[in-house]
Length: 130
Length: 372
Image 1 (cartoon, rainbow over the protein chains, first blue to last red):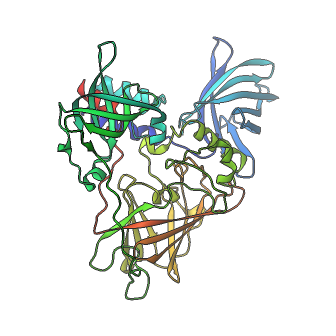
Image 2 (image 1 turned 120 degrees about the horizontal axis):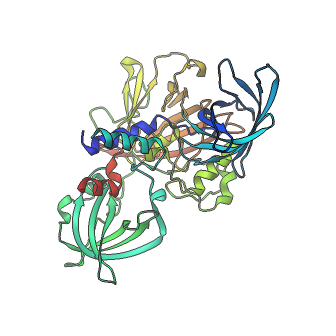
């Protein structure tokens, strides 16, 4: 395969990820954790309903957490997400993610910042996957 | 080879810059003017962007190889220029504007052959056109949007390359859609807050993230503001009109005119050009389109949209040489209300659409990669 052909293929590989609508819409993947400790996988699925409300879910599936409130500050592209998880005993645990959108113009933009779950504070980073 | 492929793929997927086809505004800084002199080392007379490479001596005695973009070869050939208008070894003087990132790349505003003083690649003045004839018609009386029977031609230059609400006060932009004054943002369209913020972000970034730079199609109204024109192929016997796009990787779009009802957005598969149904209202073809994906910008300049986008387009031909295009943009997720824009497009007689592909050759770094 010549480099020229390969080059064109690579352009089309990244093109499939494009999303130029509301910057939060899409599926995002990444993880959260505390310092150098173990990391916990995260999947965010968010969409824009057009009525000034963004809806979403964290880790869709049996252990999903509904996003209860998503607030974007358009002046600095910071995002706050409130959600509710359940601990091993089934008790509700409050989750709050506060981060900043980075690499905004890229199809693989990122959201990174502080993650608070119950009494634990760590960091998180998710990258838009599709 | 395998390692090279995996490494390259990982770089791309990591979001690194892709060498493709950024807009002029994203590539060049008009305020950074430079004059260069030296011999030509290579000429790439390649569509869509021709480059020459020249060796320029700096004040310290070193030699730097500059990449100079000097136009679209198909346009240059239309104006009488050929690849042989220059040859390797010719000494030229180039006035140019420098690229924003590559310190040895520039776009020529003039190229002069030192031996003769002749200025090359100049665009001749447009010929005076006689008064346009009446619009051609089909036997059933409908206006023909394409060539007259037995003739050829296509639609070429639009009266504007930017999309701005009709009722807006004068808004100054360049042809890439970059605002002269960011304070005019609210005059462009009735944005919802997030859409305004995204538009401002794109403007502040000099449009560098334009999906066209990643070779994605110019969907929506933008398809009628591209540099290489477009063509209608009317097929009444098949109940459809094909729109062939000269400026978007030889894309085409289908407008169904067989009387089918307008598609419901929930039934349409999201695509770059949407699903279009047209009908004639007098001398105007009115086209209703839904089913757009969110992978493109609807305008030069970066107007955002969502999958809720609904377009109503009116095409009319007041005379042989003029197409009038009017569009109503209805996207309640991105804009606070419907809004409209309109422009005209000039007929190019006796000509065919030229081949145009978004290709890797638009970036001189690719030519340098090839040489390694």
